[in-house]
Length: 441
Ligand code: SF4
Ligand code: SF4
Image 1 (cartoon, helix red, strand yellow):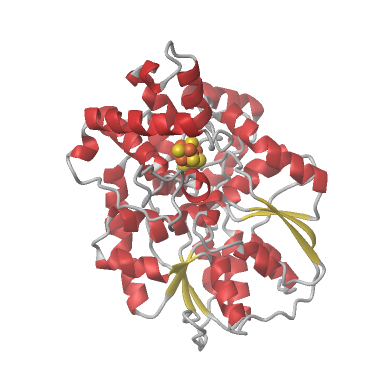
Image 2: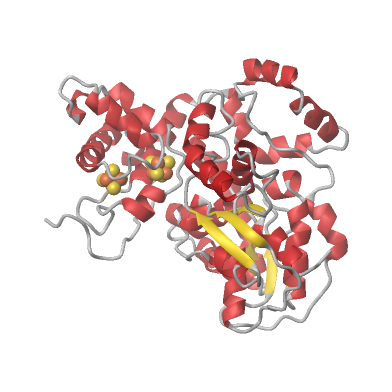
C-alpha cells in the first residue's frame, strides 16, 4: 500500500438516494474508519475546527484512539465543518482513487444530512439558511431601512442574540430594496458577442440571494466591465437560491427542491447560447461541483455545469484570446486579496489575482487563508468566537500590509475580515476594483 496516491484525485458521486446513506450504523462505521485514518495522519489540523475537535476527542479518550471516543460525540466533528472542501482538494493524499477512499467533506455532509433527517434543525438555522425567503422579506421598501437600523443598534443586537442566537458583534447582511436586478435593468443593452475559445461572450448573471438583496452594487460593476469588453450580459430574471446554505445544513430535500426550480431555467439559457456566471464563489461551486455530484446522471445538470464559470476565470479565458481590454486608466496600488475557499477548490488557479495583476501599478498579495465565514458560521453565537480565531492569521496579514484596497471573491468573507482588520474600512468585490481600473463610473 502506498503512503499517498500518485494519481489525479477523482470524486465519487454522493450516494444520497441509497438506503445505506441514511443508515446510522453504517454511517458510524464509516466515521470510525475515516476518523482513525485522520487520527494517524493529522495533516489537516490547522484548516478548521473540525480536525482539532476530532483530535481532542481522541487524545482525551481513555484509549487515546478512535475506539475510545463515544459514538455520540462523532457529530461534534461534523458540526464544525462548513464544507469548504479544502481538506479534500489541497491536503488529503488518501482521496480516491487511493484505496482508503477518504472524502472527508462528503462524509461530514452525510453526517449532517442524517442528523437533519432524524431531528431537524433549530429555527435559527432554518431561517439563516432560507436566504431567498429572509432576504426577500427584509428587502421590502422601509422594512429594509428599519432592519438595517435595528441591526446597527448595540442594545437591540444583544436582545436579538438572546432570542435568535445570532452573535451581537457579528456583521450581518444589510438589506436593500433597490435590488441588484432593479439596479442593472436600465444598464442592459444588446451587444453582438464574439466567441473566443470556449466562451460565447453572451453571459447571464446569476444574481444570487446575497448579491441581489444585500450587495446589489456589484451587479452594475459586472455589467459595466463585461459590456466594456464587448460582451452581451443579461441578468437572470427569476432564480431561486443555489441551495448551498441548505446543503451545509444537511437539508438535502430542500437542495433538491431548489435544484428542481433552477436547473430547467438555467439549462434553457444554455440552450439559448448563454454562458453563466455568478458573483459568489459558493453559488458557482454548487453548479460546478455539488449538484453534479448529487445528480450524476442528469443531462441538464451536466449542461449547466459545463456552462457555469467563475467570473474571473471567464475574463481570463477572454484575455487568452486577446479579447480583454488591457487599456486600464487607473492604477490600483497595493491590493490584499483573500482567495475564498469555494473559489480555490474550483481548480481554476488564481484567476482573480491574474486578472487584477493586468492593471499597471497594481501589486496583488494573495492571502490563501480561511476567513472563518461560511455564510452562517461566523454569525452564530456559539461559533462566532471560533470564526474570529480562524480569521486572525489573515487579519494579521491584512494589517501588516495596510493595503490601498482589500478584496475577496466572497463578499461575506470580505465583510467578516474587514470588520476585524484595523487597516481597511471595507472589502470591495474584485469586479468593483476592475471597474475602477477601467475608469468606468
Ligand atoms: S471541508 Fe473544510 S471545514 Fe470541513 S473538515 Fe474539510 S477543511 Fe474542515
Ligand atoms: S482528511 Fe486526509 S489529510 Fe486530512 S487529516 Fe484526514 S487523512 Fe489526513
